Length: 230
Image 1 (cartoon, rainbow, N blue to C red):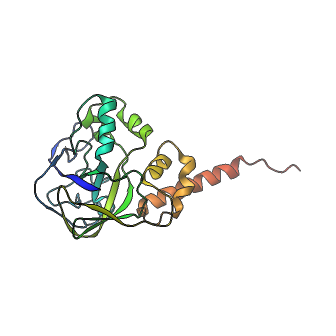
Image 2: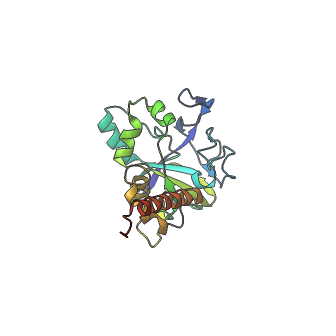
Image 3: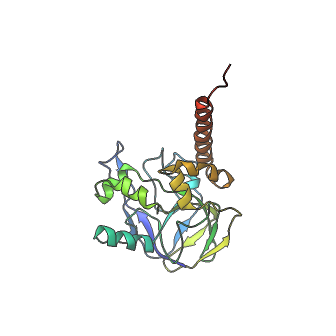
């Protein structure tokens, strides 16, 4: 298991959303890149030095410090779409090889290289910028059906990362909530939402959203329950 490439964004205009720029255009870089924990969400900061996000309401911050996608996943999409997808094409910071990114558990920790430790926090949710960037009609629905979203990670221990660094899983929590499962529950299979409550490492905003959805479902079920006859 290793990092194939480390990808840093180049700002470019964003005609697909009501903001001026996007950092989705990630390109491989040479040499080590410092990774540190960013400040709170809303600042545009991410983990990799030299990178940032522009849709600050939805991206960046400590729980979305680093985005990883597997080269194996890109290869499957290449075959399906009939086009080349270079490392970084999905806007990922780390393109991995041999790492089951979608099957990683929420709260799983990876040691990369000598010092860097990252923790899996949540799945990537596709947006209009992602669809516009790829130029594939109906991409959001297609990506959602595939349930291969890649993982956002938070920084537990800062360090440097470079292409070729080994990836070692150093901790796996005692539950079965994977990145793919959280994505399916939050998109096309809401019946899976109750399974997410055991994943303590989910971002707080995600846990709050799950609680609201479950409360609304319970309230709806109570409202629909037949009343006793008199």
